[in-house]
Amino acid sequence: VICWTLLAFLLRLCLICCVAQVITPDGVGYVTLARSLAAGDFRAGFSTYWSPLYPLLVAGASLLFRDAEFAGRFVSVVAGALLVVPSYRLIRVWYGTRAARLAACLAALHPLLIYYSSALLTESTYTLLFTSGVLAGWSALATGRARAHLLAGATFGACYLLKPEAAGFLPLLLAAVVGQNFFTGTSRLQTTARNALLLCAGFMLLAAPYLFYLRHETGAWTLSGKLAGHLWQGSRLAGGDLAPPPPASNFTTVVVRLAKALRFEYELLNLIFPPPFVLLAGLCLFRRRWTRARARRELYLFSFVAATLAGYAVTLPNIRFLVPLLPLGFGWVARGVVEFADWAGETLTRLKGAAGFRPAVRSLSAPLAVACLLASLVPLFVYLLRGDKWDDYDGQKRAAAWIKEHDPTRAPVVMSTVPVTSFYAGGRDVRLVDEDYAALISRARREGVGYVVVNERDFRYMSLRPLLDEQSPHPGLRPVYDLADSPEHRIVVYAVEPTAPGAP
Image (cartoon, rainbow, N blue to C red):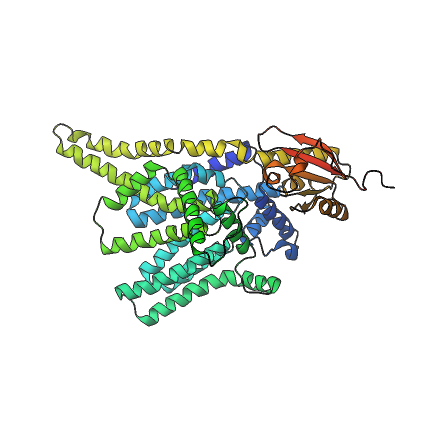
């Protein structure tokens, strides 16, 4: 486990040191908050939209690294490497040491985990805490100890401080505690109530300060300021880029869009958990007869997978939101490899003259299986290496370099749909929304905007899409930079003229 953890750390550290990456809009939000926290400005360092734990970790790391962007990536690197430990421990409890070692290998080498362990996003840290929470929850159910229930609740409280939707796992754990008593009768009702209260107490111990902060800032009890936005975006994705949200009364429309979202999640799962993984997971689940104890164990694990898929199906399906499920799936895959090796060994034992090969088959089956599994992930490697998903942000980074070189103020005010250009230009961001052209110019001048950045990916759906043609006249704007290297990811930068042409 130590070796796989060190290898995972080195792989991820080499990636952030050797491969140039571009920050995402979410990353800009986290870094901005982290800088405020590191400077002691706690009022500006907390937000109702961005959960607080990751910015706090980045702020702590920025005390070691002057570059806050690198500090954020380093937090993800450390979390991604440490994920090997709870993955190993969880699978060892489920399926034994042999399977746990294979699961640790997959946790260290899976390309999606490596990629998000180098990104300035919460996925790596959340996956570490989520896997630890699943392990802590099972430990609480298995042992019945009060401290274990308190720890499980606190772990998912920390998950909530990274992603507010993690609060949904608290009712899931409470249902498991109550269900255990109802179906097995292993504990008294008084003990069950105590364990449930300890789960809630552990969760609230970490979550309560932020919940009260949200209540103070928004005037209402809410889990997050971005939940409604995710529901809206999920509705758009399920129904099309410009589809309005379905009315609650239109049950058929809701079901159809939910089915589309589930179909989209299936396609994403097929990319990160391809058929060889599925076949081995099936071998794990169905080669041997289930006992009652095993049924409880598998149902517990599956409930977290199903809850995650269902939750994101009604909010915002995205490949990065499925990352936390990988360590859970690795358990089924790793046990499937062990089952395959045992089956091959048993088959050779029954064949004349082949029994002597059983030790070799047993020792070589695991490395060969891991090699085949990694080979099946080649399409995922291609997907992650394909640049057109991020060329828009890379183009905005290059636009920022041009602005820094040509802007004498060194603190430009940039209007864009995403804050990437303003971040790399070292200036202030003004959000660009789809509005009337005259209102756009008026607001830009009122807020002292120096540059308007137009990106094809967003503007092709907006009423402002004529701005993609810099050859046409646009009163109040002067084209100064055009980047059209990547198809459908064109970037046009306009300088805002202080007054309309010809005005005194």
